[in-house]
Length: 72
Image (cartoon, rainbow, N blue to C red; front, side, top):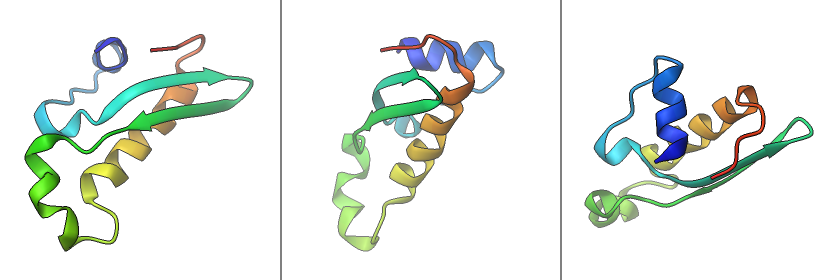
């Protein structure tokens, strides 16, 4: 939730199934994110090699590079 609050401060609004980041840590020009497919998309997991929600969450993690000192 903290991550998405910080995203909102940047003007980025993610709701519902587009909130797949469970945790995010940054430091030394690197970002590490734990992403989890939201329950409402699990039934469609086998339809994709990489679920679009997971791809979007990975890009959201990249935004974390601009969030100095973030963790959580």
